Length: 461
Image (spheres, helix red, strand yellow):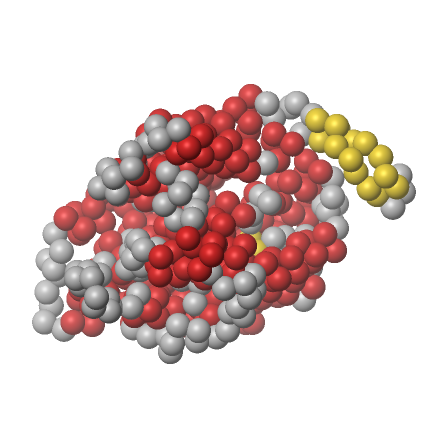
């Protein structure tokens, strides 16, 4: 349940840049993307807990790949065509999807290579907290446009959603509720569980959805599709549940043969590096909370190798994003005191099965846009905060460190914004080189992260 928020949110964010139309056919495409990500997340979770790091770690979609994905989709050849008049067939969204797929599938080879050769330890000698902090923080900060695009359709509902998340996760986090529980030792019994702390996103999603349902039933929301608040209605995409197939097996190449470009691969490598650095920290945290010893080097290499295969699988099948470990589920281990691999293996199997039931994925397509926007406001803020939290290991009294942090964050926000406002400004005479430079300069985490990496390893101190 904790992982569902990110798995559902990623395809909904990418639908627009992928040129998926806002019609019945487009809604079915959204449902298939969500189902594909459930399917791949389930497989990756079972592989990681059985053959990889062998710790109770959930695998799922990652936001680390969103910034480079947006940069790749902003290239001229990936621009969405103008919609044709009724009666004509519009250009399919699969061309954009295949472009993203190819970048993810090939870039994941870097992670596989690092895990197979054991070169992770050598690489991490150069990647410290000063590099990780701005890189991860810029993932969340760079996604503000995706959050306000959804939330701006009805700010009241969006803020209500965010308010419920904040109340449940911060103010009610210590309140425990009696819940029926089963264990091998105590059998069936009642235990006191901090459900508000565990499922704030679920509570917010349900309550905000109900609010939109009430406002739709009473016609308090606009009925004109041209009005922004129309996207807050619960009846605008209800046809997707009827149109989506009951059963569909996501298979490699389901959208076609992935398209590989140098610019796409280089951009996605930024997401790969960010993902495995975060995962290594998750491995140690999961081992500590589950009562296991610190994972040895060979186990970490095995985990990174497995995640690399998971990313490649996601790229080949066509989820439009990659997979990594979920930090939120690791926190749930500390709350529930359940650190069994079997629990995660069963959860992975459930995700695997749900991924083949497209009707299940179609339900999430009907979530009103402002509800998604409110959740994003909190989730992206937390991603930025997690990045900033790495500064606790840095001497903030040092002018050297302050310069690296401030300059890398500032340039990581400034350069991509300038590039987006000045399309086509890079003209070297070679289209491929133009694309590589454009993707590099439009990816905030890549600009800020590489600047921090360079200065941290060259400035004395």
